[in-house]
Every structure is written in structure tokens, then in C-alpha cells.
Amino acid sequence: MTELPYSGLPVPSQMASPQPQVSVLLDNLRSAHNVGSIFRTADAAGIAHLYLCGITPTPGQSKVAKTALGAELRVPWSQTWNAVDLITEEKARGVQIWALEGGPTAQPLFAQTLASSAAPIILILGNEVSGVDPNLLALCHQVVYLPMLGQKESLNVSVAFGIAAYYLRFLAGN
Image 1 (cartoon, one colour):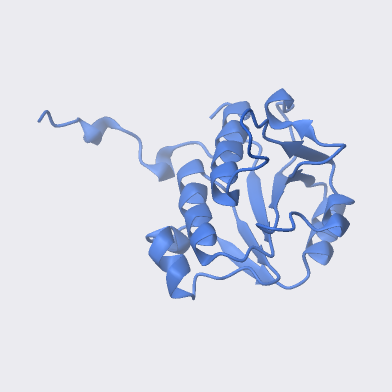
Image 2 (cartoon, helix red, strand yellow):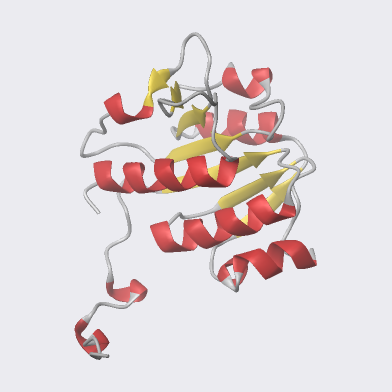
């Protein structure tokens, strides 16, 4: 097997962080495995912060840590019960609030563009069964969805997040 020349590759601390800065709010996710997977993808995609809200499992739970494989130690995170208060405060600070959710007013994620001087974004991911809280949706600047071409109406939340995270990074030029 040929060895790859890893020594010339930039390490994360040398790489430019994605612009605009993207954080993610997990709204009452139930599955510790989904949360761990989201931590792992967040680390890989350069997500700035994870907000764990409501009943969302935290890295203190063994199933989160098992799935995150150490990413829970690298990605900044915080926990709050009231996501509506948090989003209201962040929106007042000029942060763009997006939700990844289907619905009559949702726009395709892949049709979105970002201004070069775009404000930071918080992307809201909803509960695996009930989706994003309607009170949070009412606060969003943008609600986006992933087009589904098959028979199923949705993807697993951690899989959908991975697609959205890398698309936002692509839009930001990273």
C-alpha cells in the first residue's frame, strides 16, 4: 500500500474558519446516537458551536460520547432548556436564524446563496418525530429543506445535518 504524504496537509488550526460562522441548535433531539453523530460531523465541517436544547442528550451521556468519538471534546457546546429565548437573543444580535425543516414556506437548501459579508448563522435541527418547534420556526429568517427524490419524506436528522453543514461550508467558499 502506498503511504500518503500527510505532512504537507494543513491542520485544522491552520485552516481558515468557514465564513460566515455557522452554529447549530438541536431542538429536543431524542437520540443520543444522532447527537454524537452530529458532534462528529460538526467537528469535520468546522461548525462553531452546538446549542443542545430541551431534552437533547449531552456529551455526559455515554452513548453520545461513544458515537462522537472525541468530537464532543473539540466542538464548543452549551445546554439550555429554552431554545426560544436563546434564538430571540441571537436574532436581536443580528445572527441569521435558519431551520432545516419541510413545510409550505420552506425553500430548497440548494437554491440558497450567501452574501460575502453574511452574518453568522444558527441552523436549527428539530426533533426526530415532531420536527422544529413552531415557535422557533416563527423566529426564522429562512426555512430550508433537502429535496427528496425517493418515496421517503425525510432523512435521519444527523444525515440531513451533514448534507446541510457541507453545503453551507461550500457556499461560504470553504
